[in-house]
Image 1 (spheres, rainbow, N blue to C red):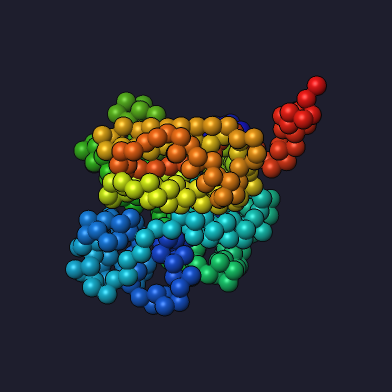
Image 2: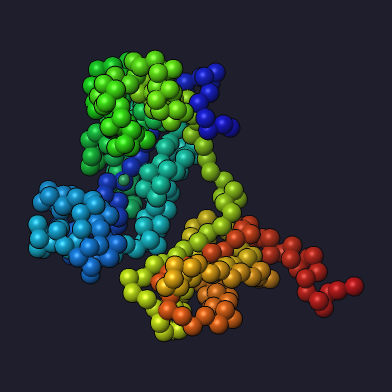
Length: 374
Ligand SMILES: [Mg+2]
């Protein structure tokens, strides 16, 4: 199935849902810890550092003026009682899995867009004549009860329109945009709201007199490709509501590797601290492999020294790698063998040559065990 625009493809016969969790990272921490639920809360890359950047904030904090992209110092000045938490990727992956489990009870045609966003093709479940709102309400209620977070749902006739409108009524919103409502409800909105339209593109469009999504939808295709190339063409089609890209189910076996890495605020000098960082990466890679149901047979470590040079070492593994301990054992062996003594500022672990766990059998069947040799 092609990802690009296909003018010969029929529009879908059923609704496309775009489900997007509200303030996802913050919501995961609130679901985990009842004591922070009512308090203003932000997730920041480096909470102890004044210059750390806020990645997301809950709605209590947003009402007090806290915004994504603010630094921790400015946010604390604005809101001294702000709870600032460090990101916890494995926590987010766990909640993401919970979300996905609920989505898959509604349809098997699911395309994840990020940890907390996915498109659901409901055409196998209902037609465009059916009211999608009660179904979306049911999904929201189920996510709330089982996962403990809230989602907003954008509903339309294609992926891009659904994605476009899921933002309109956050949090806990449900927004339906029918094809014949595009002119009244989508076109008056500013062009920078269009998915994929960055600030630089929006600025250049403004200079050409293109202020709204409707302005863009009415541009001649030749004019747009002249100024903005293929990307402009994609935006122009999106503005007109023309998008027939199918919901594509990702196949886990298409994935080539799973990795995790961490940069540190200070140089790490002591070997045991490097191993602790490698252990953290190993745990994250292990969690991720487990959630994908995959094992790997090749492992690499990487580290960066103070001169910004990146170094790597890799090795094959005879046994299937998935557990934290297995990954950590091999990664720390590679680290010791590297003989690196200089301070480092980044460490990472990656596992590749992925496959389903049963592949382990092939290794033995193929006579890797020397005692079974000819
Ligand atoms: Mg979200």
